[in-house]
Amino acid sequence: MTLDELKQVTIDYYVNLLRIKKSEQSINKELDYQILVQENKLHTMGVNTDDFKSILN
Image 1 (cartoon, one colour):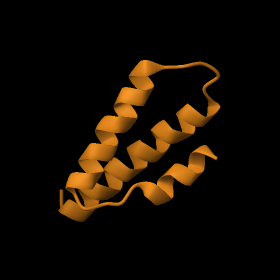
Image 2: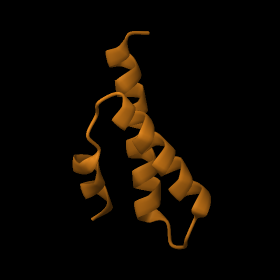
Image 3: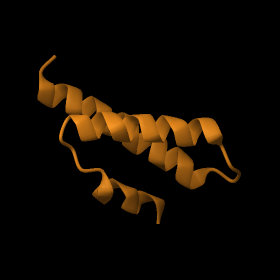
Image 4: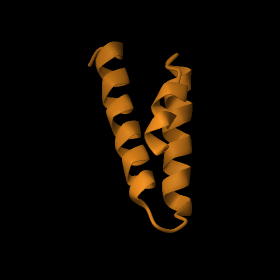
């Protein structure tokens, strides 16, 4: 798998977590933790996650 493919898979997973978070009706600490882990992975790959957070609005 190339770095670009890995980035895309990680972005897709991160966006799916954000979509789940948006539909969540209660606090879910595990979901929040998984989002944070994916953000950190993307940041280490040089991907800015700020634009993706608009999904939550």
